[in-house]
Image (tube, rainbow, N blue to C red; front, side, top):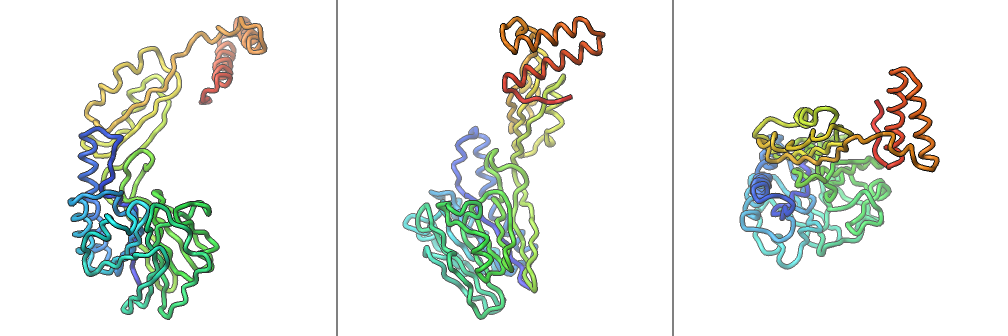
Length: 357
């Protein structure tokens, strides 16, 4: 059996421009810790090799970033195969060209498929590098005709769009490739598909860097024998969560139930919607000062006079007059139902989101 750690899209030295100075320092420190944490997982899981599918660096790199990656790759000890991506292409000024790397690291250097054989594991690893910020598809008509028992691929490619400028990968190509396992990078959310005997997997980024990368992040462990199995392993670190909730009568309670324990490094964004009483959200953020990574977006509205459009000389006005007059002549329960119908109707007419009771 071959046990593989598959990871991608570390984006070391990302600029993190949308954060405060304090948040940027914390996130940068977490990014520099990330390679070491992945090395720990590799050692703990007893992996035989590592497939690192590009965008290890975000672009211009720092000495700290390079050293953190170098130390982690060296500690892994097993063969590490790297396919540079669109953020860290193999070209002048790239760390792949300018810096030295441990002896266990195998770099793909050309924008065409080549391969390395690992005799002791009876497998062959195919891959390629970006040499610019974009890359054409590389798997058209490809078939892994190798003498080894298992054929693997590591590539920074886009499995979501056959016309992508970022090395598109299609299910038909995987089906016809003769590959056992295709390890992709580029897409920051995890996913996979089976095509014939080939399994194509992308692990997502191991650490989110904004509210477009929400949820639990990590790496994949693939085990290959007669068949291929894959499991996802979370990597400890700050996470991003984005919630939309109705404020209702108590906006503070609506926010409070979503918060992690104090001291958590997670970033939480809460979007409050719906109707609430006047002043209910005033000073709300001050009550959560102990959560510096909390963002509250107040999109609530204060209910107005539901009948103020009944005077319009239009079908809309007629609609509200019928409901208003019916409410005046009805018992309290029926009047309340008609008023609710008017409020829902008004929201629909104004293009607002409706939350049915």
